[in-house]
Length: 215
Image 1 (tube, rainbow, N blue to C red):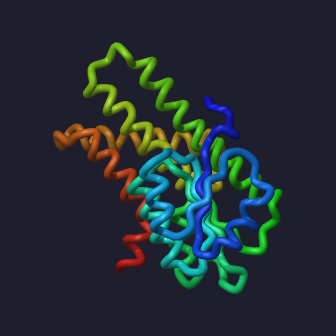
Image 2 (cartoon, helix red, strand yellow):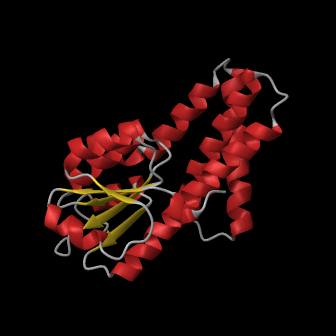
Image 3 (cartoon, one colour):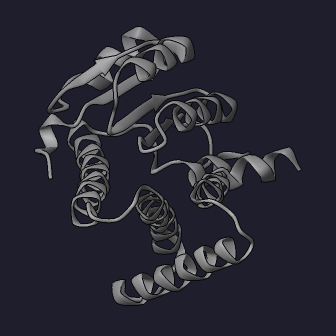
């Protein structure tokens, strides 16, 4: 697994002065790219383990999270929401479903650094799992490897979703995730589907908030 400090973080928002204040005190490689356009351009060039979005509205938050999902699906989204808005209301509950973490201002540098470290660790663990899986299954043909990686991507999405809302133990969460992935994979194979269908399921689960918003 790579060193956490080596995992790049992208910081974005509309107010450059605010971004400078947020950037202060964060360890590791932090790149600043103001605005949606700047963030998308940066993500197209480089892989980032986490995206910190300092936003003023639900619409801005969802736009950045959607852009990150399209450009870099593995990137963890950390959303900093305004102090004058209520969490889990007014659409922010949709942001919470789509993001890795939502933090309400004011937030201290030390607290934000802890959230960033958690996002980096989660990203690094998933990437390390992909590498180990690919190495261990090197003798498999390309089709089998694609299924393996698609199943692990779906497992990562389910693990975050179940872990966030479930009151089960970690073992219980892992068992629920394993059953869900196995059922989805078997159903997809029976329907003569492809590994990309599992990736589409994972993307749909991550994007559930967008579907609710449209409804």
